[in-house]
Image (cartoon, rainbow, N blue to C red; front, side, top):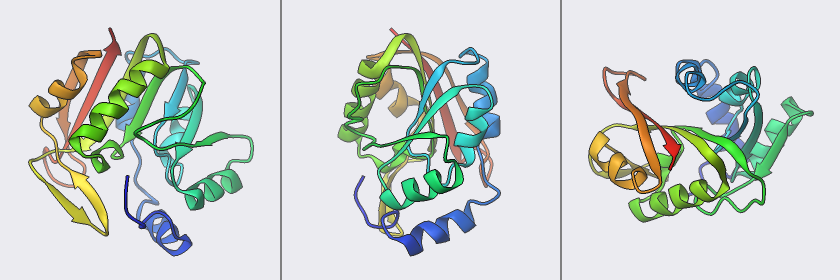
Length: 189
């Protein structure tokens, strides 16, 4: 993921304020339907930790981010939490997980980088591991606040994930407008 938006203290503080009341509880409830409680989950791109807190209610969750500013914030608010500095593409860790989760993070990757990330997630997941990722739905890409945003459809996501994962569900949902988002859940083949 390129861009400096999440790298400065000021931009992280701005994002935290904007995301104060935003979380993926409804996404995590769908994850709970396929991944048992107490499973070990890697959250890719924990940001301000809103979803990390919800995941932590039922999973042994390891948070991660590629922004040292977000990591500082996460550690300050959750001193007993486990957080790793990870790039969403390479995911350089020796740890193994039962699931990976992200809420509007993987759309910052171009198509090739997304494929590399999916392949790496396959490698760090235990047998029958679960992926659960949300994306902005649409076509094409744009630069928003200095960050690359890659839109996806059911078809584009299937092409990327089906090589490594059995697709359990792909559903549209509303973040701000009807059907502006898409959630994919898959199981390691």
